[in-house]
Amino acid sequence: MTDKQEEQQNNVKEHALSGLVWTFLERFGAQCVTFIVSIILARLLDPVVFGTVAIVTVLMEILNVFIDSGLGSALIQKKDADDLDFSSVFYFNIFMCVLLYFLLFFIAPLIAGFYDIPELTSIIRVMGLTLIISGVRNVQRAFVSRNLQFKRFFFSTLGGTVGSAILGIWMAYRSCGVWALVAQSLFSNIVGTAILWLTVKWRPKPVFSFKRFCGLFTFGWQLLVSSLINTVYNNLRQLIIGKMYSTQSLAMYNRGYMIPNVIVINVNSAIEAFCFRLCHPRRTTSLRSEQ
Image 1 (tube, helix red, strand yellow):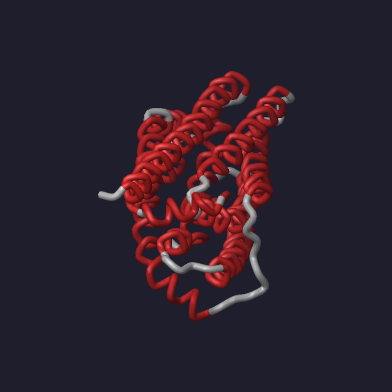
Image 2 (cartoon, helix red, strand yellow):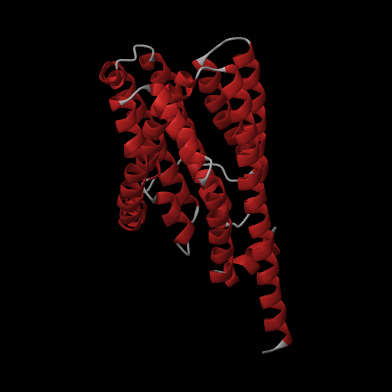
């Protein structure tokens, strides 16, 4: 091994370790803040509130799978992805977000009737706005991941989490009930997306290629199916509990399910980022020289 190759290998390891640290800090920091805020809110809000929001959160998670459609991963993996690829996926995501939101808007009364929770209609319609925000954010996240700028995730995620925590606690203290959690979720997504757009240089171009999109979708649809099955499997029981039992029971189950998984999710995310960097040494070193 030549000195140049050895230096390149050391740079890859250093960059990969940096990504591992930043990813872990992002996940762990956000989850710690969320955990502490959950304890505070549990003292201020009725458990029924958490169960009601849990139903909507599960629906949002399932619909978010369709928004990305595996295209974000396809952009990250494609070796020669350019602005045409990113812009095509961006405009498709926006279209899907608007379509899914209007669909959710009109079927919200049916969902509320199914669970016999009248206020669920307005909650779904407001929280559904996070779908559109996700469409604006997803391609930016793919660009950051592809360019290995994981530090951007740290600031956007933590900024949104801390800001929404303050808002949620204030609204709960003001006896806003379920809307404290709704505002917290919406505010977190808006602030996180805004910070990402301010710190990342990429912007969509007024171009769209159906051929490029089909090429990316050919790879991404398999990830879509896999992610959809996994998301439905992990969350379906919560929808069933919300129907068969009380929303208070769902709240207890939801909190008990999420808290033990915090460590697992954080470690898995950090290791995935670490492995991605090690498996793409050329991209890592070339991008580092550009930044």
